[in-house]
Length: 202
Image (cartoon, rainbow, N blue to C red):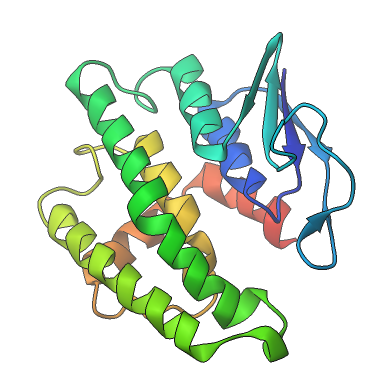
């Protein structure tokens, strides 16, 4: 049994979705937030004191995208393909962490996450400009194939779509990137995604 520490309205959403896609039994150990994005209590199993964290038997992991790679590895193909495609999954997961997430979070904090009085429009604009440059790269890639690693959905798609989920839900302008928008729609309306989203949005 996977034990996912966090709440669905956090990065733990990514891991819940991964567990749903993998068809693995899991439980959510709820740890939420106090005002100011501070955790309501310490996460003893994560030295960074952040959520999510995962317990899988004796294995303890932190970092949501690493947790998802572990879950996908347990499930195997098609969620985690073999051979060169496994390397492509790692490539896109690291691209997600380094190229996409910092900019989507810069936009998100200043577009909808922070209280309105604390938002800085210039920061939101800078985040959007930087993210748009990355979405242009993604648009070209998705013009060649329906998913990041080929013809089928993998954990690479889940990792990137879950990072973009908040912007997709909160008014980001994906109009200039129709391939990205269609891909996001397809990823985030999969049955497993909808089951995870019901926990987050309900």
